[in-house]
Length: 397
Figure: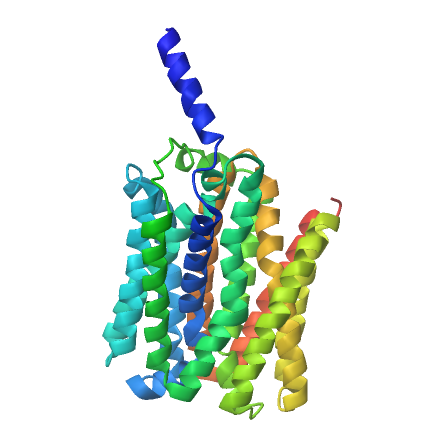
């Protein structure tokens, strides 16, 4: 009986030593950047894509809806389907789907081919966040695990701040297809980096899925999931169609719009930093506050968006508010069941991605039937409901 104990102890000690270089951790973060950039790249290019393919802007919005729905399914499915495989190989496969997705979209001449490419992206997004999002502590065990996780998730902020606006700028100057082609090139570089830098990462035994029913019975988890549904539906019902709104209502041209979307991303980065401070001071207030800012910005755009100056102010305010959202929402969810983080993460990824897809779909239907301002009204209303839900449900906490 001494032999198994000694072996187990050796394995524990092995997990206490770094398994990967910081360059390897950064390569996973660049993968996150490539995925976030690709997922939301259509937001700044909807008019060009719709005109080129011969579809409505609402139909083009399905480029955001489709990956969200597929990612919601792929997130929990990945745990089961990839359970026995080396995590390095799983990540390479998932980012290979990103390469293929962008290449297909860049070459698409029909709506069906366009959507097929985005289906592949959705599978990659859901699988990546299930596997890659939890790798920080395994790549850099011990006290450095938190830093590794932060570096991986910095790809989200960088994708919002730089990737999406840069893609929109390239698309407006040189054509939307080149934007997706360049995104495919970035993904190829990430795959090569993972092959060279990432060590073998054996799967761990996990009961994450088995604990989901227990997590769902937790009242704070229920509040968090409902808040996630409302705020992500609201955000993406509105934000997916902000480019047509700023074009048609605010009369902001393509060059100025690219600069404004970059400003949105920079404001979001600042909001992310502020959100990190705010959740440490008062988590519930931070989540209610970010929801209220998004609501105020959407309603403000509808009310005064015919002024380019007002539209600029509201768009930047919106960026700041949305920048606070991921850290506030995720922290709220994790505090609901700190002893079951894997289960919470799987639920959150699925819920958020499904809500993103649903938001873009609802916004697209509204745009096609009632005009582009209606999407912002829906978004503002859903964000306001989120703020009220948090205040009412946590008022005494």
